[in-house]
Length: 317
Image 1 (tube, rainbow, N blue to C red):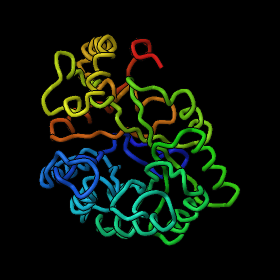
Image 2 (cartoon, helix red, strand yellow):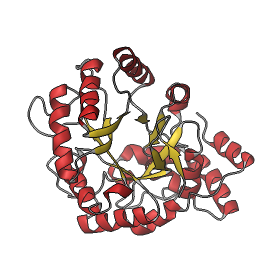
Image 3 (tube, one colour):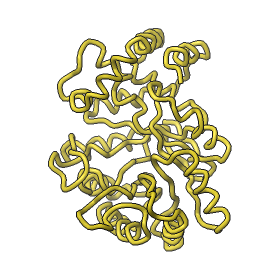
Image 4 (cartoon, rainbow, N blue to C red):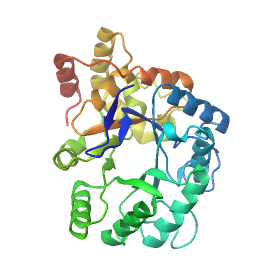
């Protein structure tokens, strides 16, 4: 495994992060349904640690909070080996204050996440989205207090447009508050929109990017070339299947490069993305140990400049 600093912080993370969003119940109290049983989830987490993955991405909303509980059980006795990242923002109950980035909600939900994770601190606590009704200063002061209390080590954000992230950094600066060290955007060969504004901002300000959907929702694995596999994300989300058809020509080039290297399209896609400017880690979502082992094979080698250029041309911004 390879490790880099998360942005300009001193925190070192693995180039691959294990996403926990699909761990747990198929009928959660809130959030999307899980696809991996607790027992299989814990096995995947243990093997991920054994492969050197130290960054685990979670959220209070994932499978009704069960994903945090599963991660907490899995890392018991190994807490010092991992970097626990979780998030707050999405709806977690029927109450009017059970969502968002208000001080009330942040302070309430951090306690719930700590309890479910079975730990007394969260390494990276992230705003899971922009709350357009709450002043940024209110949210950032709450996060700053959590850091001062020792309940949180670092803060980050997810799904923030470039201008909101820039404003957040400014608010933290002028008020001498803790600032975001990372951002989670959707970024892959099949979705390069962030290269226009967010990525240059991150390069300039030293913000580490932790990417979700680095394989375009499975599109870049090549599994949609013939048909939409039963049980795949494309089967549940027609928009994914439609995008897969759009990128068929690009996927053919991706497969050619993979064949040249003796790698899989998924491995090439991950290798391409983790080498982009400002990228610290890519979040992988797996449901089987075989997928985890394949993804780990994306680390430890580099594409040539010529191969990188062919992929850039096949999947234009």
